[in-house]
Image (cartoon, rainbow, N blue to C red; front, side, top):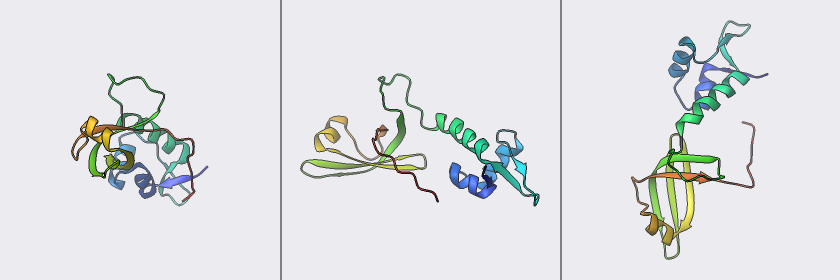
Length: 132
């Protein structure tokens, strides 16, 4: 089972190393010592913590319409490029940048503009996973 340094765990969680240390010192994140005495986080513990933490980061409002899409990100529109037929909408949801191509009509009907809060929903039949 892989284990992660404080710095690598911080990168994976999108926070500072100091935040990871505070979580560990506060008992929120299990940390152990490796053979050299360095503090490390066991892979399954980090995965569990990331899942629990992520569940609340981009929560969909409770009054939202039920949907089969499980990947929803509440964020803010940071860019809109519109042409005659299509539009590109950029959303920043925490550390995640999402870009969607939609119709110009959809942008106008939804009133999408920079600064508007939106929920980006992602449903894909193909997800690629690479090792670092």
